Length: 84
Image (cartoon, rainbow, N blue to C red; front, side, top):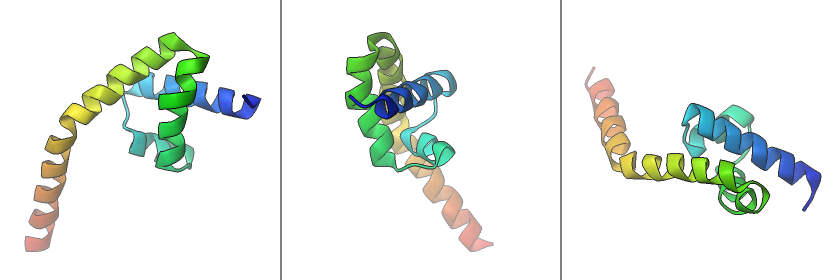
């Protein structure tokens, strides 16, 4: 595996584990696509560093469980803004 992919996957994984950010937030922070972040932390990171991968997996699972709540809040805020 290319050194660039390894270092990027580790950097993304550590960032997600420390900040508990979503894939979308991480992609925005690093200026890369969501697909790249997802591929790096879900496929490449597992082969590189299992411990960091497990921490990231826990954060991503938590984010997935809360996804429907965040979507509802965002929709509510959107319509509140439209009413004003």
